[in-house]
Image (tube, protein in one colour):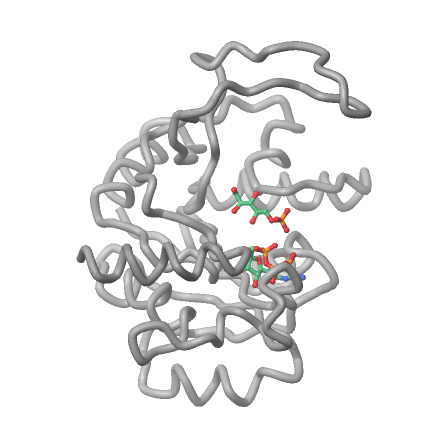
Length: 223
Ligand SMILES: Nc1ccn([C@@H]2O[C@H](COP(=O)(O)OP(=O)(O)OP(=O)(O)O)[C@@H](O)[C@H]2O)c(=O)n1
Ligand SMILES: O=P(O)(O)OC[C@@H](O)[C@@H](O)[C@@H](O)CO
């Protein structure tokens, strides 16, 4: 199967507190976004890579990927992650499948990618995630309302993989209905479509806060 990947990288990285976009932070001598994009550069099934970037960072991103044949679109990001992805998505043509992967998740593995490819081919909508290790409770105003059934709860990661026409339909529907989402699956779920889960790895972290950076260095050391 062949696919196109959209990588949103147009955040501010506010929770990292660096004062600049965390995807440009160097780990192991290279910006996070370079590590992330490499997984798709090296995957023969990935035909094209589309990035959504902050307008002020367009030049630096173009420079970072100037030697890439696969990075075929660098698009202006939007106010929210979903706006950034939309701006890239409307420019994707001729793809059967679209994968969406956070620019801030640099530790994807080939096994996770392979599982997603198999599942999306079979079903049209596949996401990845891991079982949670802690007990999970729903808490409102500091008071426990309920304990969730852990066998029914998953911490969801990216990539998330979809049939191209389904994802485009889901994004248009979300825009028309002003849906605010935190992942792409939520838009497809809103259409009433089934989304299937495959296993991710605990290392497939999103670099979000400064603790994640320490974790990132440990993951790299272990590789
Ligand atoms: N308007 C936005 C917001 C986020 N992202 C991207 O979406 C991914 C996941 O988002 P998140 O971890 O929330 O990143 P930031 O928005 O940068 O972080 P923060 O919320 O702390 O500012 C990141 O690769 C980020 O660059 C994006 O492309 N456009
Ligand atoms: O923290 P935010 O809500 O900005 O972004 C979260 C998303 O990136 C996240 O839901 C996916 O990576 C899937 O976990």
